[in-house]
Length: 331
Image 1 (cartoon, rainbow, N blue to C red):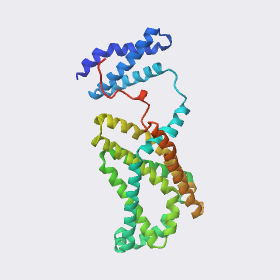
Image 2 (tube, rainbow, N blue to C red):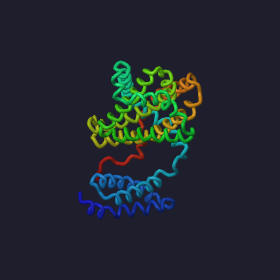
Image 3 (cartoon, one colour):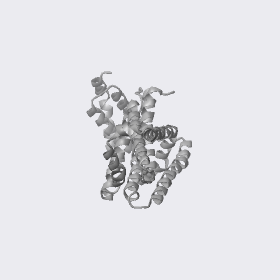
């Protein structure tokens, strides 16, 4: 498509839409109908320009026009708190439930790899020699592992943990479309967890290890599994689009994937607060109980709100009225 010719032909319609949008409160009946028709028509123009690889400035300008016109067409917007509540009570749990087979499977495989790595350390002592020197291992199991949770002020530690976990989750989510990188990141983290567990257990510190890891680790790792699953689903939607076109498949899955990022950030914030304010200060049995209850609460959230929303046709995508046209059509 000749982008310059396309812009030249349709520019009058865009100007007319901008004019009607500015006069939205003083439109006649005929002008209001014209506004709706032009809004729909220009939406297809935007899709055509994106498909043709038009310059970002033109696309941005037309996207802004569409956004302004959408406000004029739909009228007053719902309060922000209503959008937030719908996200956390409907959209986010629905997306979690829709991808449950992916992240539950990923979680099981992760724990199997971690258990295998721990078994390697326990069953083959020579593996320990390849990990670090005896003095380094002694420092880790007798001091560093436990001190990690209390050597910094709780509020600073919570922020650092949140940023670190969010970075890992964002990496596996973003790289999921490439499939293999996300798998390697998760594999590396499973090995590290298993090696740490094996070293602590082999030095009779297994109880300490699980009392420090369990409170935040169950929910934290679940969030990482979900982020990995979301990214891999995005990549898989391109490989196997099903009855949809590849672009439709990636667009739908991508919208749900990006939409999950806010919810996962909230989950990881909770785990960061547990790791900073619960793990260092409460007795082992209490903090383990808190960790298990947090994980059970999350699964209850997914399998109640998520399943109900999913059965009503929600799957984490944005509202149909907010989606752009997926292909240009004649108007």
